[in-house]
Length: 468
Ligand SMILES: Nc1nc2c(ncn2[C@@H]2O[C@H](COP(=O)(O)OP(=O)(O)OP(=O)(O)O)[C@@H](O)[C@H]2O)c(=O)[nH]1
Ligand SMILES: [Mg+2]
Image (cartoon, rainbow, N blue to C red; front, side, top):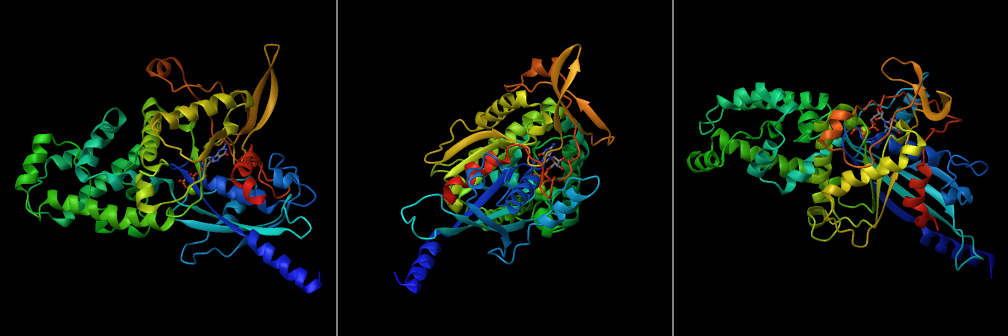
């Protein structure tokens, strides 16, 4: 074959190998999304032709198929860049600190240049590029998704169910103000703004107690909508069915009752729907991060709210054709990975329990999930390791323990974190057991690489077939 013809053919074949993969990283607030994306980008950027020992279970790395990885210009220039550099800078500090909580969206694109392992056209140079698009957002906004299919009345009534225990106390101030309001009277915008602020204060107080079910999500993280009337409404959780009926009959279009509904609908259509349309309309694979350990630390109520939040997400995020997400935005997901995050909080022998607990946490709400055609798996990882496993002698016995710098007092400690329940804990269990999972500070980088636990299994699941 003539040299130039061969090159042309090579180029043509290589171009054919270029692929794009858009990854949705899904998880409630503080579940570990930013840590995960930062680590994933870091693990790939630090791949090296000579030493890929940090990713032994990622076949393409092990087989030295990956030639180069670069961050490149993202497709959509109107979305802020994911601030990888800032996150890495936090981990490079001495001592390292955690990247901060996400306040807005961020997107990044990696170009992964690879060599095919095998193929029909073996005699030709077989190189291709996989473009990997990932975007990050505040987890708070995820819980707005269920609102898309919920009327104002349904939403108000659904919140009634949560109104017990710690919530009941925290809501007192706001509820007292709502009680004195004549809902059928002509609305005063200032009064609405004041009451919405009081409702928002209540949501912040819930968050501070580890309660996850925070709706509407933009109230605690308004982003560009700070101060907008679209965020000045609140649910009517105290009305009886009869009171609803009466208000529906007698309230005029300029009443508090009418305006609350209109603002809710506006919020749903203009803020929530737009957000999902813009960012969730096209992705190919999804990873769902769940932190099962932190809610165990807080309370039974916190744990149950995490379960309820995931359940509500699942009733919208499931994968058959009938789902809300599919109807509205039609994403085509072919692979889905459930990940228990922060697995370095427990010793290796507890990982099966952690995976089993997470499986139940997500499955309880997703029993009806139709995974038709969607490959799925469950795993537990630490995107950014904060502890090292050690063996210590305790009463003459060797036991597995963890060592790390504890966040609350910055002391290096060695501890045995205890067992993770393999099933959803029931009421008895909460009375008899006490969970104490300490927070740890991140470990320092090792030769520019972020120490992790099983990120290579995640990369293998998500990328392997695209690099083949
Ligand atoms: N030990 C340990 N802690 C982790 C890990 N990943 C995250 N964390 C902890 O969890 C916190 C939240 O992680 P983020 O990655 O910021 O969570 P997020 O989902 O992006 O949170 P939002 O942006 O608020 O929605 C971190 O500040 C750490 O304290 C991990 O792999 N190991
Ligand atoms: Mg984040």
